Length: 360
Ligand SMILES: [Zn+2]
Image (cartoon, rainbow, N blue to C red; front, top):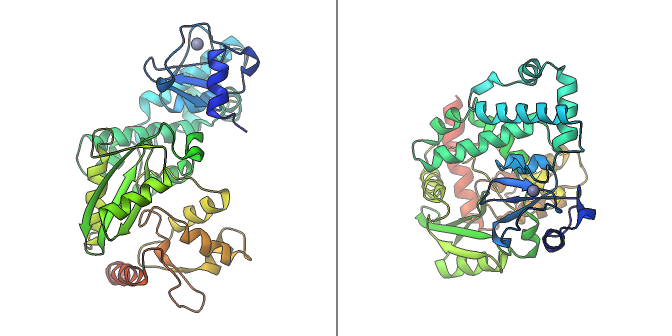
């Protein structure tokens, strides 16, 4: 288990060498990550992020500090050097489609694929594939921020298809910073809202992804919900810190107006392991299809849990992007919907009409 942010920071302030190896801290202003005991000048708290493994820091684009050498001791110097080269190669070439495989990486390094995979994981705490996916997601974000279509950005970022984005978004789903458990302390949240055919929709996101997509009767009421969810976060309107917000809002609105736009955006939600399993599965239900609570339970390998599946669906805070509306009761009754049966009916009928017709 990762230490709390508070204890991590305490260890950084006191340069506590006993905490070395238990976590790493990254400094966003300098782009490096360190051991708790690093002798370099201490950063400001607001510029610091904590990581369980070096790989997670690499994934955020940070480099190992030259003073405290956070990778030293995890393998011999030559091995560490080689792993860093593989990292740099992945980061520089992540956009080249399917060109990067474990085999090509191993060949470049002069190692066997098995040895590379095992050593990479031992040194960084994540697999080469996890780093590659994360680099692509961040390349994708940059491209989306620059404008253009989602589909073009998906391909340009090196994903072979939008389902590949799903895969890595799925894996990143729920990888929320520890701050979330504390009501979003120190977290910035940006929001936007729009009128849609199904009523007012408000979406909000952290710097990692959407955390809130909900229908409601008024902006005030929706803001109240958002604040209740993240009582300690700094919530601001607009695109200052989150330029994708506008594009996401537009895609959600277009979707509700019947356009076939993808909604495979990054998500940043707090969830239990069970909820994550259910929500991941929901994202694989094709448009135009439905599953029963029992079918979802069976699919996630927990056949007796259809009731709990219902509860997990009801707990979803990110409407449409996690399509909980595609789950219905076993007797083909529609089951519940957090945002009203009228909306669930309209969503399902619209999807059935558009997508089943398309496939014929
Ligand atoms: Zn350092």
